[in-house]
Image (cartoon, rainbow, N blue to C red):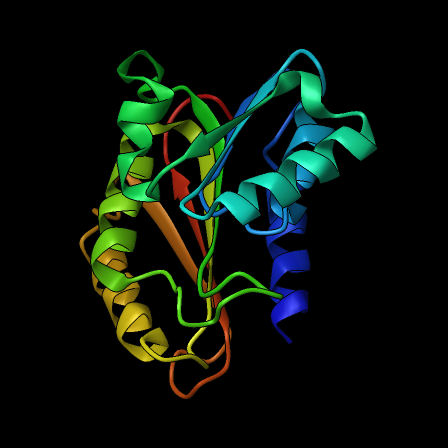
Length: 191
């Protein structure tokens, strides 16, 4: 089911992401979202991929290199809560697509997981970077230690968004342990 939410997030990004756009994979992991974004924006665009774990960045680098997509991607070593500082304040409201795939890095230490507090700070940073007409997707996993708390934190953050400025769609069951997807659109020009 989690893979289908990732595919759904990709499909939803396809609706708004064009060649030449700027995009961020806020949780690089194994590089799947980064590769998807890089293919969509092409060599005239740019993708930043952020992860705290060096193994995730290395897996992403190898994946991009093998796919011939490395030239317009930049890896950011650090916490996704520092997106504005890492991508640059000059990029505020210029990023067309930002993807989050929360939880833990597959084939890695499952004790290292995203946390509600830093994820909410990262979502706030992402909201500052997202361009009018841009889209943010969040795949939320609850089946790990800390997952339910992080899911509640994400729900709380979504509830703070002013519906005059943001469109929020939740896909999947919000209760239980199953993953779910949030699609957040910044209203305004650019669509």
